[in-house]
Image (cartoon, rainbow, N blue to C red; front, side, top):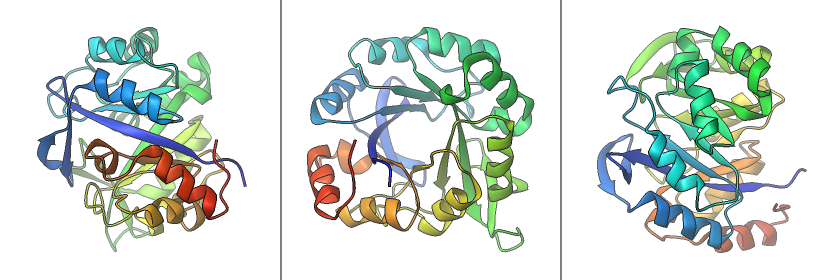
Length: 253
């Protein structure tokens, strides 16, 4: 089994890190630069920074936030939210991101994935796949966009497979049913994606206990474990998570 990475996530709104439940009831979780500095010191392997309001507010990502965070860390930074064109991707990478995460724009224009991976390299292109349970879909999961607010009428697992074929280097599945609840990653959804693609999968949404992290790898099939609330509100330190996973036989980066 390849080594597992820990990836704290900064959900951004109005220049601050925020965290809610199912993307609403947002609480302030501090300054992004302070958070990024702290997480690097704590042993994070990568960092994610998602502008959660960009698509809903119909604007691009705030590049100054990216520059400020990129300036204080050396670990890989993945930036998402409001990235809708090759120009947006280019500007985000130029601002210091190592990878970009695209979601709504890729659903609207799947060719963006193949164009972006051809131009910048597939290893820099992450496609976020947000879903909710819907029994009418073949897999039981329907793709949603715009911060989980709009169902698309498309099967989320089939879409993940298509994203890989188009050149996505990583898939980031988030179950809207689990986000921020601390009830654990949606293992059924994560595993369905991991089984459908051969690129790395980032488990996301709902980590609340040390066991949840372990299950994300062993039951969910993820290589990267993303979490926000448990790190922002200091439920666990990153070193605690890593020590626990090592004690259970996983290989850490």
